[in-house]
View 1 (cartoon, helix red, strand yellow):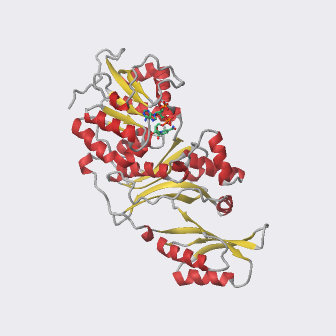
View 2: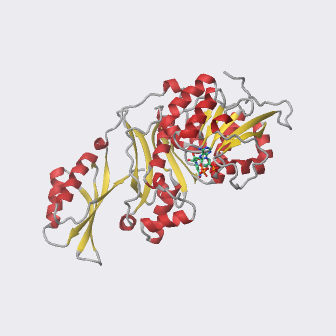
View 3: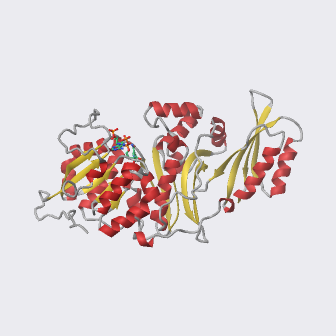
Amino acid sequence: MTENVLDTRSEDDDKPKKQIRLGIAGLGTVGCGLLAVLKKNGDLIANRSGCEFTIGAVTARDRQRKREVDISAYHWCDNPVDLADPDKVDVVVELIGGSDGPALALARAALGKGLSFVTANKAMIAHHGAELASLAERTGASLRFEAAVAGGIPIVKTIKEGLAANRIDRMHGILNGTGNYILTMMEETGESFENALAKAQALGYAEADPSFDIDGVDTAHKIAILTSLAFGTPPTMDDLPIEGIRNISDIDIAYAKDLGFRIKLLGISRLTKEGKLDQRVHASMVEASEALAKVSGASNAIEAHGDFVGPCMIEGLGAGAGPTASAVMADLIELARGNTGSTFSLPASKLAPLPLLESGERTGEFYVRLRVSDKTGVMADIASALRDEGVSVERLIQRTRASDDSVHLIMTTHKTSESRMACVLERFSDLSSVLEKPCMLRIEPI
Ligand SMILES: NC(=O)c1ccc[n+]([C@@H]2O[C@H](COP(=O)([O-])OP(=O)(O)OC[C@H]3O[C@@H](n4cnc5c(N)ncnc54)[C@H](OP(=O)(O)O)[C@@H]3O)[C@@H](O)[C@H]2O)c1
């Protein structure tokens, strides 16, 4: 165990006595954002934390690359793992990204040497959080990751500290700004998914390879971490059902609006009354009057339900240099203040998996859209499939398409199980009058 170099209390209130030397790995969007926060708000941060943060060493892939901040005065390490040097740095800040590779090697090296470690890396925490938390606790280091979930929104601290007295039974949230921006554009302008994605890329909201954002993987990383914090499980991506928004069409966005819903990509984690974990990521129909439905553009929002606090929602910017660096800095200030509790809400040795709710067991209401031939007998076939599988319809609307002689049948169901719904969809698909794969979306009670 190393000496606690993070004890910064000073007898002289005006001047911080202690320095914390940061080792910053990754000088991209967030890394440069962190240097900008330190430059602009260094005095305020020193006053609030009782500590002066200095740069002990930095690393990135390409030393010669032109950056938004001048790094020429900082000690440079070619190999990220070399940042884990207690002679040069007190805290390592990892802003490279990726679940494995140099980020994980650096985390293991730093925590192994008892150096506290701050990261914005959701993929690494979702996949290796339990291992790293155990290592941190063994060596007396602190592992913090506020920026890994919803960027600037302090949701990790909220669940871990603010709501620590509550049994949380449900959390759901918009955890990916790119996805939310695309869905908002589609709703506001009637654009196709492809056009909205291209716009998001042009504005820098979406990466050149946007697959983690639009396929729900990024949301899944974040909900896996929140599940761990709220329910005391080791974070894991195993058996986490993930559906993205690639297949959401402008047609369904428009029908959702007509029915009083908005389509949102949600990360959902809840505990059933029987103590089973129901964790999933998918596009959901949310009542348009709900606060979560009104979260638009690149914003994120998370709502947690605690048994004493009730519903508690936080909204803000989930990405970008400023918001993300703000969250990284918040972790560093907490370390400076001596807040070095367990990594998740429980000590790593007490994290335990929960039995999982099988996806077929889940019950809820559903939206289904069918494109069918406009001829007699079709409704009878549809009704038979619903009757045989025991699924009752709440609303059924027929819309004629201008472009051909097919029609859209749009229905919402009463509460039923996913397994029954899967049988109904199979029956629909087998009908010759159903002209394309049925579109099904879950109506999520918020
Ligand atoms: N951007 C956001 O809004 C945001 C929000 C929340 C969380 N995060 C997380 O923050 C982390 C950083 O994201 P970012 O957007 O700042 O990424 P980024 O702009 O792509 O920057 C990544 C940095 O890591 C460096 N790097 C890449 N591979 C490396 C390697 N093998 N060895 C050493 N350095 C390497 C790059 O070096 P070069 O500059 O030399 O290429 C670059 O400086 C990720 O975990 C991300 O998920 C980002």
